[in-house]
Length: 585
Image (cartoon, rainbow, N blue to C red; front, side, top):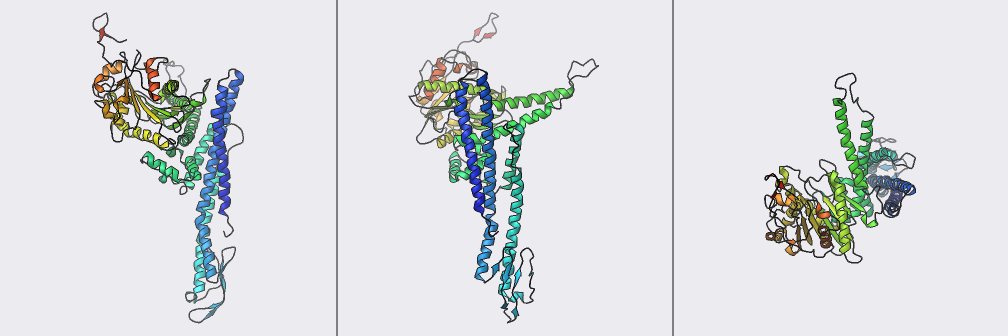
C-alpha cells in the first residue's frame, strides 16, 4: 500500500467524466440542432434520418449516464482508500521516529536493544495480521518500548490492509457490473440495467455521494446554496447517482434538473416497457370454448387486459413527456422542453418548461385546473406552446420567452374536492417554492414573471399568492376562474393593476361556480382586477388561436398591458322550448 497512487483513480475518473460530459453535449447537439433541421423536411429519407438521430441521441445519453456512474465510482474508491492509506503513512512516519523499519509486506522490524529491566533482546519483525511477535517472543516485551511500538504499528498496518481489501472487493464487484453489451441500439433492458447500476453505486459509494446531504424540505435559496457549494465533479456525481432527488429541487439550474429527470424518465419508461413485454408474453385464454358464454372474455383475460391498458397508458404518457414532438415537423429550437419534475403516482404530476426560464426575458407559469392528470399533459403542452407564440408576437426585438406547465399538485376531480379550497391550499407552498426557485435559478437581472391560472388552477394561484411570501409575480392572470380564495385583487399581494381576469359569458364554470365557495369572481368589477378582454366561447376557449383571449395573455406575458373589456356580467339563463330546460351557448 506504500506505493498505491490514489491519484490514478481520480485521473481515471476525470477521463470518464469528460466522456460523460461529451455525451451530454452531443445529446444536446443532436436534439436541439440536428433534429430541429430535419423536422422541417419531408419524405421517407427525412423519416429515416429522424429515426437514426433518435437512436444516436439515445446512445449519447446512455454514454453520458454510464460513464458518469463509472466516474463517480472511481472518485469514491479513491476517497475511501484515503483512510487506510493515511494509516500506513502515519505508521511509516512513526516507525522512522522510533528507529523502526517497515518492509513491503507491512512487517515492522525493531533492532537489538535493552529493555527497561536492563535485559538484552535481539531484534526481530512483527508481521501484520498476526497480532503477535512472529520472529521473536520476548517475555519482557512490556518493558521494551520499541518492541511495543512495533506491535502497535503492525496492528495499525493490519487494520489498514483489512480495510483496503474490503474496499477493493466491494468496488471491484460494483465496477464489474458497469458494462454494456455490444451494439448501437440502446434497449429498454439496458436502461433497466443502468438503473440497477446506479442503485449499486449509490450503495457502494454512499458516503462519497451521501443522499442525506441533499436538502429536504428546504427553501429554493438553501437548495441553490447547497448546489453551488459542490465542485463540478460533485455536482455530476449527485446527478448520476441520485437523479430523482436532484431533479426535484427548486432553485437548481433548469438544465441540471432536466438532465436528472430525463434519466429517471428513461429508467421508468424502460421498466414499464419491459413489464408490458412480459405481460404480453403471458396472455391468458380470452374465450372459453364450447360454452354458452364463449363470447364473453374470461375473468383472467379481463384482469390481464386491464393491467395491460394501464401499462400501455403509462408508457404512452412517458413517451410523450420524453418527446412530445415525435412525428411533428417544423419544430423550432426555442421550443426545446425541459422536464423540471414529474411523477406517475396517482393522477401524477408534471412540470415542464418550453424554453429555458433561467435565461428568458419573460417567463410564464401556467397552472391548469380541474380533472388535470398526466393524460392531460400533451394538451396542456399545446396551451403553453400557444402562450409562448402569442407572447413572442408581442415581445420586444430579441427578447426570449419561456412558458412553463406547472402541474405540480393534485388537481381536483368533478366531485366535492372541486367545491372547496382544500386542494389549492395544499398546493400553495409548492407553487410558492417553484416561483421562488424560478427567480433564484435565473441568471443576472430580474426576468418578467407572469403566473396564469385556468379554472381551479386560478384558485391555486390565488391561495399561493395570498399567503406568506406570495409568488413574487410581476403579473397574475386568471381565466375561467371560479374564485381565487380571496375577496379582492389587492389580497393577492400585488398591485391590482397587474392582476388580469377574463371570463367568457358562455363559460359554465364561471357562471355556475364563482361567488360561491372558492371566492369572489375575479372577472367581476367588485374584485378589483383589470378586466381582460376575451372572446366568446366555452371554458376551454381561452387558447383559441387568433382571438382576443390568447392575444391578451400573450401581451401580459410579454410585459405589456392587455386590452381591457367590460367586466363580467352573468347572463340571464334562457329556457328552451319546453320552458324548463336552460340553454347554454
